[in-house]
Length: 368
Image (cartoon, rainbow, N blue to C red; front, side, top):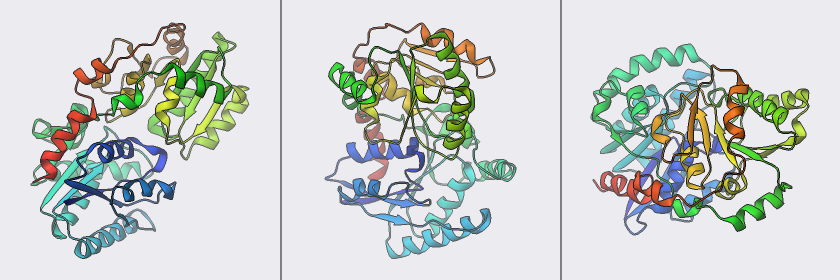
């Protein structure tokens, strides 16, 4: 039995990394591997740690405090000390920027880890200190590319963002447990009744309330949907720093009562069933695992042209520019009204996005 350390994993905003690691957790061979987690941020919901503990895993909190530099320094020191107390042969490090993968990867090597896997999950930078982060990204990208680390990426675009030699990166598709998301009319009726939605056209999204997800632009799209369809509703799943501002803006538009702000949920697969159309007008995405999930539920999806083209697994995917007026999106969103849903599991599996395929490749490296 081998313990694998998943590094820089937390449930903040229930983002793509957390969703990916949970899928790995549920699908991996538990007779051979146990997943432990090292987190560099506080969990939004401490109960989520129990999901790893139930499978025999451990969760180590190594997050730092203070300003940007102090926080990174404290994090690395705690991470190093943890590795000395709990040695690992394999560490799988997740991040959206090169300087974190490089910094944590070197710390892992110094801490005695034999196989260090670095995993690119994004194609852009978010948060504060953007100027510093952009400089660090360029400086670290070159150095990271020529380390001995095993290099993963969730898409070709994410590989080009993170590595100078992207052709050497191993693309690990963000596979999902397809049966979990398969369309169910019974679940649809149950969730819509729970939400108070009857025959209304329900558009939805899943994502953090942060700048990369473009929530203010999305709110303008929603406003335009309601102007064209006086009965439509919107389901917004997620949390984040900008949520309060978005809610206040929705009130100023007079549309707050027609938007269902659900927050985070451990049952997002059920809420896809209730939707009629899914949108994601992001400024950038490593891949956009929610797009894969939504398609697996048989939903038509309309996404930003900044989202990697790899997410197009079914015919009902439309890419639109976020530079256009939000009303342009509405034309395509409303054209899916009345569309019949179908089970698309075979299409998802054929494109290699079933977790059963992804886990085989991952286990190969975990077994080293």
